[in-house]
Length: 361
Image (cartoon, rainbow, N blue to C red; front, side, top):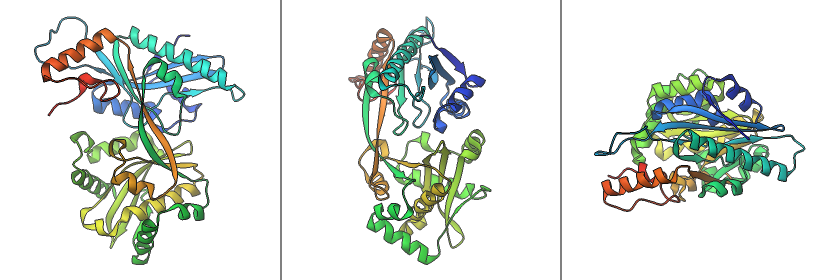
């Protein structure tokens, strides 16, 4: 089996994704935007055979030269999936057996890895989708599959009563208090509250001490809206006429993603995000979606963020990453250069990946 690498402006990329159940992470407009932000180039590997299709979006990046490193020879490159759960996708005939699906997946993955080698990529890092899952065994045969922990899902096919029953008691209490106060949840279709969302989001990033690359500007969000169109929704909660909390949600193929959110510092005691998520799940349920994915803790940890999300549902999904080393000789050389530069042992493939990109403060 052979495959092709497509650029973001290829109609074939859009057409193939449209034939599959997908999320916004696989859309060429989003991958192009993510590539621009990370200084890379949007590409998509595709392979087809006997009615099966495989689509794998990624961002190809130059590997920065280390100080004192020889600049001779061709530039070294690697690849990363776009921000979020930009997993490879596979689609096949509805009557295909599990064995046939696995056989195609193995063949497509081998063709993918072979093409990465031909393209001269040293390594590739993928964040796998917790809902649009692939059999991890064929992935592990070619690279490292690392378990990132649990994420929280809400079954939007369940009744409103069942969703409320699964909501933790302290969350229910805060939601009821917010309703009695008259806090106003709404979907801002005009996006007139975008400025309020940006302030709430940046205040939240400040509170949690987020790294610089998590601080997005209003222009960044406008570009995201342009890329996703009506797949992106802004949900806000107002208290006394002011934006107290706001969140961005995506809606694609019945999958709703709780993408980014924030709460203003002065409204933290009122816990408006609980009302926001309660309102959002009912609104997206009414629109016929099947699942709301809340994600997990910071860095997939069992932290206070995970505890907050877990209070809304008993549903869980696994987050995994897939780590490929396609040029072991070049990878090892880059790791040795990194170790010599930083005077420490580099992390292994199951830890930070690729090791040669780890920042050292």
